[in-house]
Image (cartoon, rainbow, N blue to C red; front, side, top):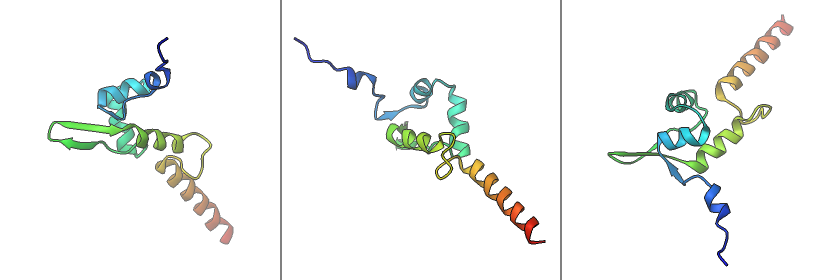
Length: 95
């Protein structure tokens, strides 16, 4: 009887190329670049001159923090907008 390798078959590789990460997240490679630019996921690591990879554990953690309704760890842009809105409301009450 062969042991099941289901748990390892479903796990993405530990380090992914841009194309592999895009496939894993079901998006385009340009969306990966945009997510990095917005701070949604961390930038890739340069392992050598021709090898740039994302560490899946870091991407997964970042995306869990980005989940809607997670105010403490969400998208930094959304957090900034929320903080600015709250500060603006506070300044109107002080007048």
